Image 1 (cartoon, helix red, strand yellow):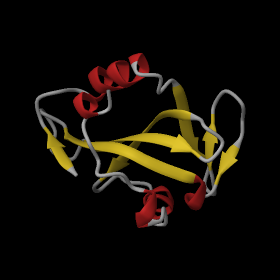
Image 2: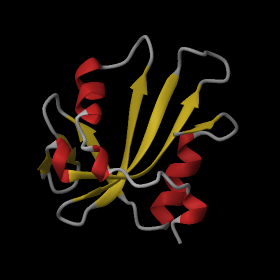
Image 3: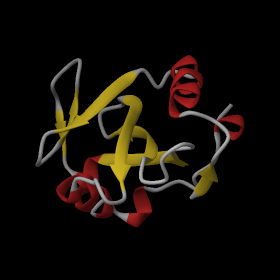
Length: 113
């Protein structure tokens, strides 16, 4: 996973949206949900194309990971996961349960095109 200190998450979200990753995925406690279609996904249904880690510049406890996701039914989008002292442990466990085979080499946006 690459450490990203100089960019804000929204900069990358916009760039990935331009590449077709337009779905916003949300976690409901058990599944990752497509916010448009309401389709739900288990860890094995999710493929991680890339991810970027951020730390807040003014508050080191403000940490997050931006996941770039493709789903088994062809959905493409993003999910922002908080981590650190304020992390949702169920959400973090959900992402840990995604099979390692479903992770790409975690390229950055410049390598997607």
